[in-house]
Length: 129
Image (cartoon, rainbow, N blue to C red; front, side, top):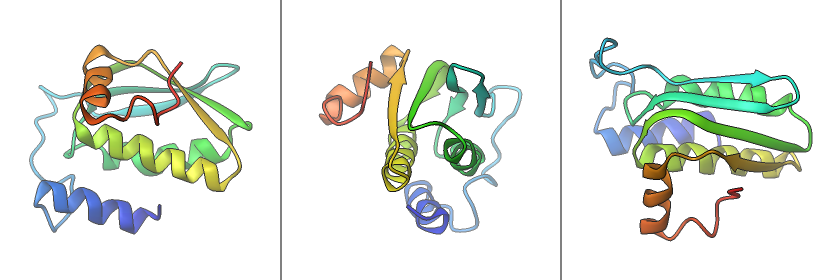
């Protein structure tokens, strides 16, 4: 999925046509998401992920995914909160890696995210270990 198409999807969900990040997220109450590469461990996603914060990590994730080996492990241990925007984020990354002939493996998903996946019937689609 292209960056512009992903931005359009997120902006429709938030009702924010100017950009998803300018909705006044209170930095004291919500930690912006980060994604970092850990040697021999894959990628680690952490922070508060919502429609207001997801764009801050989407493009950075694409850059890191491109540099990863054929199987990319994404550790979600540090995700503090994830609404349905995290499903859109992970879906976009999965589509991207498929285009790169790579695979993603998700580990240490928070219970709230697993519950959201089960409710939507996506636990069978996402590569969860």
